[in-house]
Length: 298
Image (cartoon, rainbow, N blue to C red; front, top):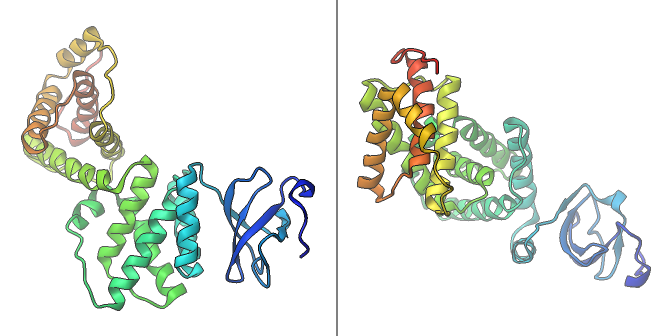
């Protein structure tokens, strides 16, 4: 493939910066943005400055943040390209199963994690997942992705990783939905565990994990955890609405207060009034599904 001067580069074409194996290249698009490209044979006998036509490209890894793009390029230089191929299979499977797009940063974090997991396995180092039960319980779909990921890794790389890794991969998928930090994700999972323990204690029974209201509550708690992990200025509270919710759902509100106290005791987190109100609404729905409350009409 011939070198074409930048000023003559066709819109949509990519200029190679570095070839990585036969099927990956680091390149720049027509706007000068760094990207990683995947396609059959696009890196074979290619040199810096060669141009790749869009028709040769199967996938473009383009991250919005410049530092993220640099990190992905660095990973592609440091790691076997098969690792990114495996990560891509896992991420695309996750997006199909979950029915939603994941943050582009997951291509970096998951590829990096898989590399470390394979290195630990090679060295005979076992790293137990202390949150495996919680991940299975609260993030069932993401854990299913984690199990699929182990099958993909074994099929593509010939390595059988332990079940704990399915849990770690599931956390990466959850985190990619929230677009947060992995350290936040671990803390959010612990927070969800404590809240659900308080709910079970309050109602004297654990809720059914298959119900829609349970899933809605878990989703709400994940985003609640994210908001508490990164506090933002609170909007003006609607005192009238909050008072109405507390009046109509006294039992659910009492449970929410117990949760508020537990979060303060365990994590030293304050639950704002607005968050307390919306938590009450979700707890009321869950209590109805559990047969622990009666429907109230405003």
